[in-house]
Amino acid sequence: MRKLGIYISLVFITGFFLAPSAAFGDMITTAQTRTREFIHTAAEPGTFATAEKISNTVGEGIDWAFDQLILLADSVQLGELSKGIVHGVGTGFSDFKVEDYTNRGLDVIEDLSKRFWLQDFRRDVLQNQNSQVKIKPYFKIRMDYNSNVFYEPEAPKTRDEVVWVFTPGVSVQVPFGEDNRYRIGAVYEARINEFTKYDEHDDIGQSFGAVANFKLTDDFTANVTEKFVQDSARSGTRSSKRVEYMDQVVTPSVAYHWRNWSLEWEYQNAIRDFESAIYRTFAYANNAFTTRVLRDLTPQVRGLVEYTFSHYDYAADETRVGYYNQFKTGVKGALSERTDVIARLGYQGREYRAHDTQFDIPVFDFLLKHQLTEKAKLDFYFQRSLQESQFTNNRAYDEKLGQFSGSYLFNEKLRGRVGGSLAQHKFQNEAATGALLIKRRDLIGSMFLGLDYAFRPWLVTNLDYRYERSNSNNSNFDYTNNVLSLGMSMPL
Image 1 (spheres, helix red, strand yellow):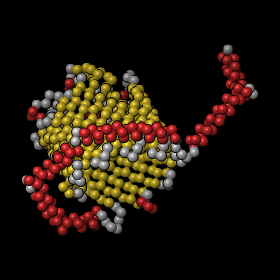
Image 2: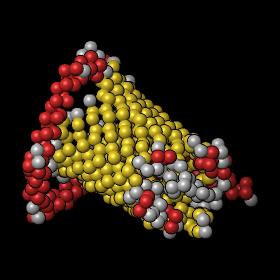
Image 3: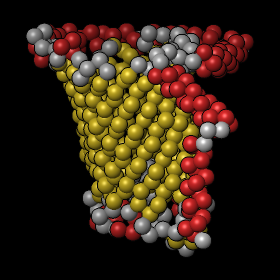
Image 4: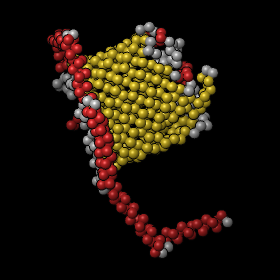
């Protein structure tokens, strides 16, 4: 019977493709015609009128919505208020001779540095006229007051602390080749953390980043980036030392452009390791492969489809070995002269060698950058994704994240900043922490206000206030921290 069924199926399929019936012939001809039209439209240079209308409509709508903020600000006279604040600060500086004394001192320092070393150093080393290599050293110093330096759930007043952070660094840019079509860049910095009361937590961290861009032809480019961080995360309690870790990520990629199409391939190798044997079980190596196809929809907006396969390998705990497959599709580009967007929607599925929980969820990310006025900028970012977990027996957690930031240039020297974030973390497995055995749920929020004042191009001061709060159904992860920071940056 099975052979008879197969035979009948083959006869039916053969008849479908070969029978000279008008119906079958019309269907085949129609399918062939539509396939040719699709291929011709896809391969033909140009964009799509309908997509351009939709893009323009959405861009105009976003611009209009943000313009209402400007009208609202005008109605409550925020512009006059900001001018009054700037004028008041300037008047205060003048009344107390702060600006006068500061300028006199800076003039002396600038004059001495130019006379004895800075001018020759910049000419001969940093900006050598015989070389295109650009070297830019910098130094940053910051003082952080923390109301709860160890993020403890019920922190007594004695947990406040002043931490000094000293950060020397240098960046290098090396363009070369015909028309400088190749470029290599790198930046290195060290971070020296000095605790005022709890000096047993003093540590030194460092970061290194490098990028190489090669435009091999007009249509073919290759890039390599590397990020290296050796640092320590703040411990959860005073009795435990800061957790020292090392992250290294190397990402080579290539891109080929043909007419209105781009095809991109990307490989990422990431390594995380810990100094302490206690955390060594969470050390992993991650290898991810991404293929991305982009097509011009309008002159300023591109559609994209991408697929990522990512594998996690834990040398100290084979039960944590796992992988995920992820598909995303979306758009990126400029909706208007003032609004840029990246929007992607997809699906991610994770599997682990020893885990009975399903990790299959819709994922998305959305980034919006808007130039509100010549002096004001706004950024918004939202995402949902699965993140690798290092919490007890949980392999991954579901993260929903929202962030915003804005900046306003009061004048050529003073800039204001504001922003915040809110993240929800859901862990799917029950875990024991102390006497609690629950599925952990965290809601973590923060807000910040900041001011930057440029006394000179080589001397910029920063004043920031940041509020941090974590609410969790596991009280071990509840905390509140207030941070007041005063910093100074000196780029040469």
